[in-house]
Image (cartoon, rainbow, N blue to C red; front, side, top):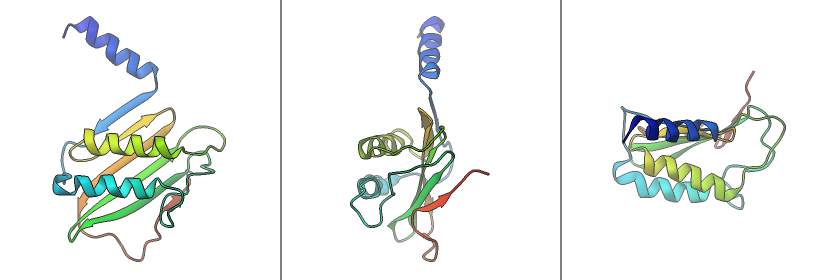
Length: 140
């Protein structure tokens, strides 16, 4: 690929507000990849009891959840609204962006698109059973 073509692609991506980064070390999805995709279908479905509450994201608000994929493998997912005002997250956008992370980053990663940041991170271990599912954090 010529430098001018590469510059155009990178520049166009930056102008569209898409910033992506895959993790380069740590636990990979492995056999848990399909289970992670199924978990996203559940987490992004507002009709599911344990899913992310998709409405009323405030500025800087992060919603996170841990999903047990197997005996000693978990996945940490979080979505952050970095824009101004309150906004709802569409179910289709939630599913698309998280699955892009799962399928595009073998060890998880984080992508920001239009002020939304989606992070998926496979890890060894178990989810904390005491931690509240879909925890909510606000930026200071």
